[in-house]
Length: 147
Image 1: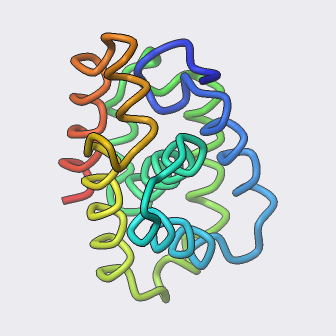
Image 2: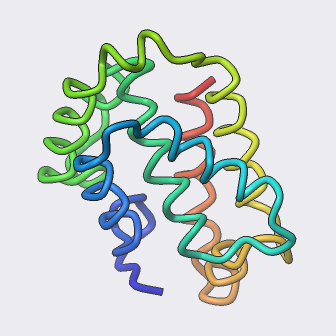
């Protein structure tokens, strides 16, 4: 696990997903594919879970940028904050015309599934490393911001 902290962008895979979104033409379709995969896979690998977490942070920016602005630099990271803001600006019009409610619901459902033992490799890795108590509140905070 290329992780150096509990926050979403403290993980290499999430950072890669964020960078990838910047080059996309239709990111919300990719987000939906990712969430669908998380919801249907028998066992969610950690890379897929981190990708879903990165997309969920981006979606928070579209729902309410104040929630991104309210996160500390430790929670989001300065370069990642700038990238999230740039993505929100780039795809704002696309978001406005996208069917948002079903996508947000899928996102929340996917995050809830990522938090389950023996279903999510990411959960299992955090649990094995005794970091579950630090990681769980991060995911719960994202869910709260999406709700």
